[in-house]
Every structure is written in structure tokens, then in C-alpha cells.
Length: 409
Image (cartoon, rainbow, N blue to C red; front, side):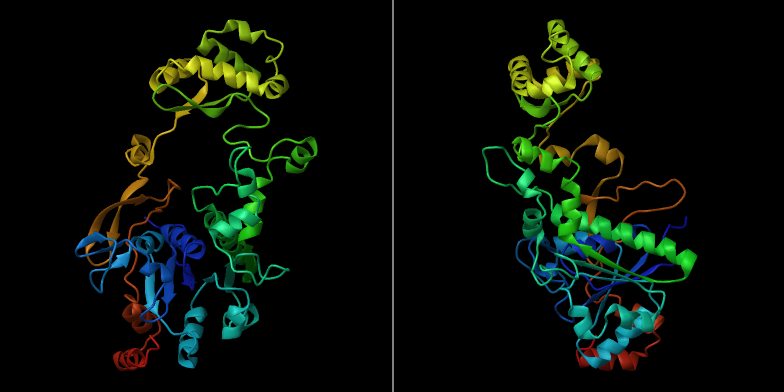
């Protein structure tokens, strides 16, 4: 079965998370991703513990083949070559790869590619159809262009931390690495759009993804400026400033999430509680009233739940089709039957020592007509030198040996 992106070749210059997450998803959809890494150094994530290898998983590297779990997770389905791009001979090799590539992906600091001699204008000279995607903290221009960025700084400057947490608490980071992953998804969308456009126009594209831009776009679903004007707290914990009940509530043995958005759902909720009197209460009859009196709604829910287990509460709520669920711990998430059924909980493999026993996420897009999955483990750094340089670029064994000895590949 063919894959959607079969025949698309990605020259991947990225490291850490945002860029590798883009190329990993492109690989899952069938693209050939050639990850370029510095000789003997590789992606810096390769050196982050814990490590996997022949001796299992350890927090200290035990042998030369040990590879970080982060590297193994973020680089599934890719090929890896080593290349010194600062050397002129290395630059010539990169030019040859760009000539046969479709996409160049990088997440260097702005200006780095130009200093190497590979800005967009140069890439277009090498390959007029090339799609060049950059992901950086604050974009390729603007007053913050030179700032160094990581997930935490981006969650802060985008406003995510400003809207996350409880009203009386500090700005709080979202536990998932969304400062990197949201921009990655925008980068993926931009590349797919550019590939489709190229089919019609024959022209390449320059894509500039700012991590701050991408994450800021996600907080603006709410009317935050109006909330500020009316004194509505920016950080509302698990509550929703427009809807009630809408929270994670404590039961006897855990937490229950309850979400009520419409008047019909409120009536179903009151029936689940056995509180028909609430259905006609003028304070709660319409959404605006429930929002205005949300503290009273919270008290009603808490009083109802105090003598119920999570299972008992969910049974009553689901009988009336109220949107609800439990809040499982991560150990329970990793055993979730729905995620297992959908193929989302998989075992991570090492390219040389095989299965690690460590769980990882599968590919979340399910197609009917084409295959999309993480079918291959992450590569061993530089493990595809012979295939890429020998078979794709036609280098001889002698030439590759000489370049290896001189630290070029």
C-alpha cells in the first residue's frame, strides 16, 4: 500500500523537538526524511538520559551504541547521515542533497543558514522547486528575532502561561511540550500546503514559523481583551469563564470532569443529580445565568459528588448523556483500552538492539486508502551514510572513506 507522501524527500537539518517532530510526522506519512547530523555529535538530544542499548534502559550510557530515548522517540522513520556543514566540502555535499530534495527543514537561530551560505535565494538557485521551512522562537524578523527560545520561554511570551493555572496562583506551564509541538504542527501544515501548491505552480516556497506566533494563535479563541476589560481572571484553573459546570471535581476516590454547554445539557445534568428543582431555577435556566452564578453551580456539584465514587458519578451522568469522564493518572493512561485499540500505545525500538520495553505514541492520523505509521525505528546517527552518499549521490567507497577520515561525514 502506498503512502501519501511517497516520493517526497526531506532534507532535515533540525535538532531538539520542534523540527524533529515535523519531520517525524512527514516520515509517518511516507516521506523519505534524511536527517543530517554533525559527525560524532549528532542531534544534542542524543545525549539526554535515559539511554537504550544492548544492556537495556539506563540513566547512564553503557556503550557506544546507546541512544537517548528522546532521540529514539523523535526520529522514528528517518534516515541519518553525518555531515560537517561548516566545511566547504560538506557544503558541496549539502548542495547535492538539496538538488535531489523536495523540502529543507531547519530550526537554527535566524540568520544561521545565511551565514552558512544557504539562505532561500541560494536554495532556489540550487533547486527552484525547493520548499524551505524554518522554525524559530520568534520568527525570521522583528524585534525579538535574535532571542534564544525553548518551550518554557515560548509558553510564557505567547500568553499560554498567562491563561494557565488558578486565579490565585502563578502563571503555569502546560505540562505537555506545546511550546514546541504547536509550532511543529503549523510547520507540518505549511509544508503540506506548499507541496500541494507546487503541484499546480511548479514553484517552491519559503515558510517562516515563529513559535511565539503559533502558540499565541491558540489562546485567542477566547475574547481575552474583553475579559481584561470586564475584570474576568485570565487564569481560571479548570473552569470556563463562559460555561458552568465545567471543571474537574473531586469525588470520593478521584476526580470527575463535567462539561455542560447548552440548556438541554443542563436539564440532563439536573436529571442525573435527581434535582429537578434546579431545572426551573431562574438563576440557572440559561447559560448566561449559570455563568454569572457559577460559584453556586460549583457548590451544587461538589455537594452531590462528596459521597459518590468516580464510577458511581460517571454511571449516573452517562445515563443522561452528560459529557463527563474521569481524570486517570499517567500509569492508567498507558493502559487505556481505547488508546490501545487505536494503536496509539506502541513499544519503542532501538535501531541495533531492538525492542526497549518503553512505551511511545503511535501516529494519530488514520487513513483508509493509504498507509501512515511509524514503521521504522529511529536511525543510528550516521547509520545511512552508505545508502545516501553511495546510492543516492553515487560516491565511491574510497571517496566516502576519505571524507570519513577527514571528519566531513
